[in-house]
Length: 342
Image 1 (cartoon, helix red, strand yellow):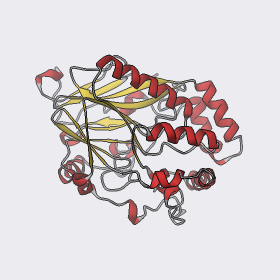
Image 2 (cartoon, one colour; image 1 turned 90 degrees about the vertical axis):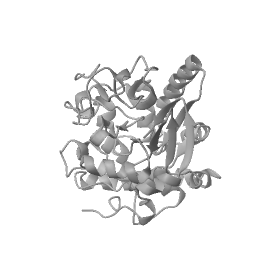
Image 3 (cartoon, helix red, strand yellow; image 1 turned 60 degrees about the horizontal axis):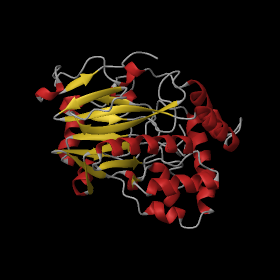
Image 4 (cartoon, helix red, strand yellow; image 1 turned 60 degrees about the vertical axis):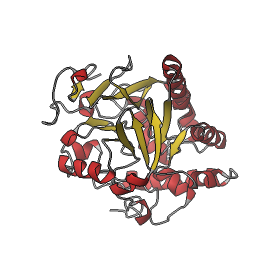
């Protein structure tokens, strides 16, 4: 296997305990946007949806970008637009931003791709980051601003603490909370490991991204929500829709949640955001025409969606620590409304 793009640099390996001393942020509700990937059309739709939520509740509604907000935006104007809007909110660095700020030639794209990702995809990602670096280098101050971003966040909502991370609790580009690790299709992450991470981090839950496909569950009683991608389709056939996470008290559900889990007074929701898909695919093809590395890796997904169904994102059978029932009773539950194949 190619080493570049697969290795996890030592600087990425923070360990779950690093969350104990991470920056803290309090919120009444939080929207967590992972993997925007330079999609300016998605950014506009997400900001509009979050603004509507904030206007409705008139409280501390926070918009948090937890990494990889750059990727396809090799057009300088698009890159500048993404960076200006994202940095106006709370932002964490993902591996893309880390590699733009401080390139590590051995790391390549810094994705730390696992064994179930093929070599050709890895090499194309290394090529994408090189083109993106050229764009960033041409914008004064762009990489300096990215270098100042934190990588971890302690999010306080009600009396719960959520560890907001990019990859997994051990590493910036970790794949430990990928759907492939959690559903048994690849060497897995067991529930006991998730519980150990939560104890070391002194958090009640995790919100993550990085691995491109969504997954949500409550292993060993620890809520985990991975939004997959806020910049690409996440489910088969749903090509004009991206996915973001919303965390709020259970008495303040979003009316448009695709699915959700509830635990200890909080609701962890997957919110579908409709975007101008035709406009985005046209913009994408302008920057990444057929034959380019990004087109080869991603256009099929943009046009048809991944081979991932909504039912793949939420366990069909809840973990034994989850108590089915009415969420306000204080137990944990999985809300399966909307859980059907598209």
